[in-house]
Each structure stands twice: as C-alpha cells, then as structure tokens.
Image (cartoon, rainbow, N blue to C red):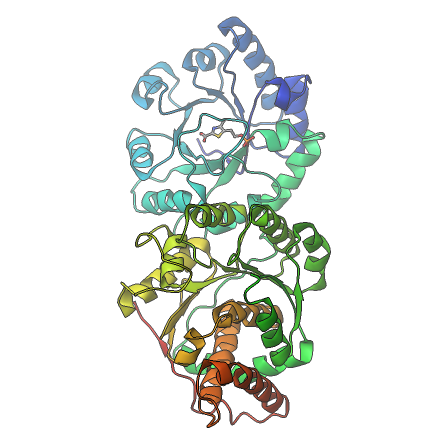
Length: 519
Ligand code: 3NM
C-alpha cells in the first residue's frame, strides 16, 4: 500500500502537550491542515479505553482518506481495523505482527542505526521512523540523538538495498527546522519521504494552522537552498574567469557582514572587511540578529572565545539568517580543544544550516565527527591527513551537510560536495598573525552575499583575493615579518579592490593556483 508519509502526525494525550483539549478535535483540525498519516500513540491507557479512542479516531481519519496507524499495540490495530501498526525496537517483531495483521496492513518500525534499518527492511517493514533526530522534551527516554548526519547515513545505506522503503524522521522537528531536515536529507540517492511530529502540531494553539504551515514548508525548498551546478569541462578555468568581476561586485554592493567574532580578532576582521569594500558589524547579541538578518548580508559565527551564553546567542542568530535565506558561515575555532567546544559544535550543527563551514584540518575533522583526538589550542597542529584525504574530507562533509566546506592549510580544499578544488595560494605569514583565518570567514561572507547562485564560486573568489593579497604583501621589500606584514596585507586587499573597480585585472592574471580534484 503506497502511503503519503510527508506529514505524519503522532498523537500524545499528556496534559503538557494536549493541554486538556479533546484529542479527536485536535486530530481532525490537523487533518484539515494537511496531515497525511495519523499514528495513535498512547502509553498509559487501559486497552478498552485505547480501543474506544482508536475507533473514534479511525472514523475521523477515514473521512479524510488518511491511514490510521496504531503505536505498538497490534491487538488494538486488529480490533479497530486500523490501516497499520508502528513498532519500536522493543515492541513485537515484524514477522509476528505480520502473522496477526491483514495482508495489506502497513508496518512501520523505529530505527536509530544502519543495522536496525537494514534489519527492519529485511523483515519487510513498509516504512521506517528514523530517529531521534533532535533531543525533544516529548520523549525523554530516546536512546540516541542521531541528527541530520546520522539520518543521512541510514538513508545512504537504504539507497543501496534492493527493496524500496518509506522513511520519516522523528524527534524535535518543528516549523523552524523542517525544511532544513528535508533539504539536508536529499541531494544524494535517497532523501526522507516526510517528517513525523508530535508537539509541533498537537501542542500548537491552532493545530490546523500548524499542520498547514508545516505542509507548505515540507513541499518548498528552504530559503537558503541552492543546487550546485554540474561540473563543466574545464570548470576551474571557467570559474576563475569571473573572479575579478566578483571582487568588483563586493566593492560596489558593499555587503553587510555581521560577525559574532572572537575578541582577539574583532578589530582586524572589521578592517579586512572595510579593505575589501564590505560593511562590518560586530554583534554578539543573538536577538539583534532578528533585525540584522533582514538587511541582506551574511552572518559569521566564530566560536574563538566562547562563554556560557555564546551558543544560545549563535543559535538565535543562525535561525534568523536561515529564515531570511541569507548566508551563514561557521568557523569552528578550536573545535576539538575542550569538552565545551566539542559540545558547542554538536549544538550548532544540529541547530541550523551553514552555507559554509571553514576550518583547519583538526576543526573540520571534529565537525565531521572523525576527530584525531584532542586539539591543543586553537592553531591547526600537525596534519595527519594526506592531500587526497583532506580533499575527501571536505567533499564528504559538504555532501553530508549539503553546503560548502573550506578546509584551510598550506593548500586549501574547497568543495560543495560535487566539485572539489585545491587552492595553493597564500603565504606563511598568514599563519603567523592572529585573525587571518577568522577574517577569511568575513571575506567569504561578503562574497557569498553578492553571489548567491554558486556558493562555491563565491568562496573561491574571496579566498583568491585574500591569498593573492597576502602574497603581494609578503613580497614588499619593507615587509620583514608578521608585524610589518599586517598593515601591508590590508593595503594589498585595498589595492586589489581598487584595481578591480578600475577594470584592471592584472593583479589576477596568471596568479591563481587552483586545481580541480577528481576523487
Ligand atoms: N519517538 P516531538 S521521538 C514518539 O526517537 C517519538 O523514536 C521518537 O515528539 C523516537 O515531535 C518521539 O514533539 C517524540 O519532538 C517526538
């Protein structure tokens, strides 16, 4: 039986969620709003009461031609003639349920890992409830929070199986994250078919309006979505052709870059922004992002000097920029250095969408969940990956998050999950002063703001301007080391901006050391 899993409602009669209202009324309202499946989930009632409630719900769902699924209790499903059952890992197994249910009954299974998913498909599940996506107060005894990354791992494994199976994600899904959850699940072979929610509808003041808004969001792309172009022959050369015009565009448009930066480098990052023609604003105050996000610029999250309030401020700002569809850059400074930073990475990665994640090898490994151990301080430390492994890491993280990743080092690796480039420009002095890596995030924000159609192209252009300016600065005879390099670097960023604005591209001719990598 083909089921439309796009907006799957799971009921909950606890007072905190149902708030004393009548479950049947709430379910009927949500059906009017566009719910496509209803699961009756009741953990505390007697069997007789459950059957009575399920019968009432079934009358309602039938009127909307929507299947009614019973959680856990196969006997209740049989008694009321419901369309199916949903089984947790500790409930009846699929074979036993099949023996008791009519032949065309729908069987769903909760899974939290690739192994559980494969087993459920082998046993003949029709759809899988994949979770827990995000921690949720609705169900506190969930076993593992798998996030968008864990969900994607399961979906990738399912794509390789012979038998197709439906999929919904469950746990903490609401209006503010539903589009991201679906968007990030797609882009590879198999994406989610829908989402399952409890509180986002049942606890809503107006369940019909909540269901209708969720349904609308499920069927539209998030504002930050972009589809990476298919690589062309000679892709690197084609992208490089347009770098000078993007430099000019930044100077002309004066994009706003809102930095939630660290206090070590705030002044330098603001000066870099001004030198390239961007307009910097520094604000660590999350709520201020509600206004700032509407000005059309980018947000940079740089967690170099975290405090106990940083993460909640970042999360507010990220959501505001995501909602407005304006670019967000994440610089996970010192991601693996302390427990606090590791936890911040997890919270931020599950709390919003980043158009670009930029970091050194250790930081990108930590974000990917494949850390090489504890990072010492915030500098990059010794590299343990070879070039191909770095390129693969950047590509895989970008593919998983459906964004761009820039892994910085002597050679930088930039990928949108589809294309991968190695960039060999830059100078060692960039690693000898504070704030260069951080201000590269600011530069990327400016370029992402003025060039929305190809995020990788925008970041590549900003990176080249930045690194060629560093080479030019280091080559000045009066630059003797990091101290004299710093002002010279600002001057050279400014000089490139001025040259590009005059239509003089000599600063760029033959300078880019960019190579496309085929993995
Ligand atoms: N099952 P809300 S999480 C019923 O992870 C249920 O298997 C989960 O509620 C699982 O949409 C969950 O309010 C509750 O976060 C989901």
